[in-house]
Length: 171
Image (cartoon, rainbow, N blue to C red; front, side, top):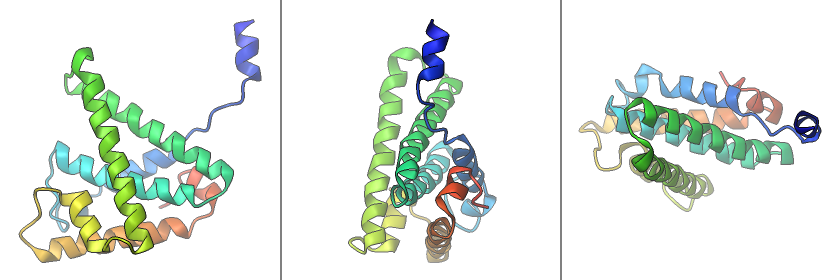
């Protein structure tokens, strides 16, 4: 009976393909070379969570199905952070707290980027807050690179249909 109930339950949206595409973008070496982002756990997290925040906002701009996928994308991010923390050796007692902090950091970035996209927050200020936090690069060229790369990423997301985005065809 349990499997029959599972078959009747609506299938939850799956954002795995989109999350994989966002992760692939976050792994581009240019973020760390030209963008001056620290090639560390914190630096990689900053880039991934920033790109994820922009993708969430784009999904929220779409259809009802797209909005549901914004939740699924957040869930994919959480599952990945949980797995990464376990891989780094965090145990169950501290794992929940660490993942909650990461989810809070993502939510903060979503807020910054929502404000930047509306013009309420300067785009370059959002870049500094979201990508560099307390460790800005010495080179203004690095900040400019990241600012322009994020602007292109954000605008690029807007050029894809909801279906293309949901299927992770953003490259």
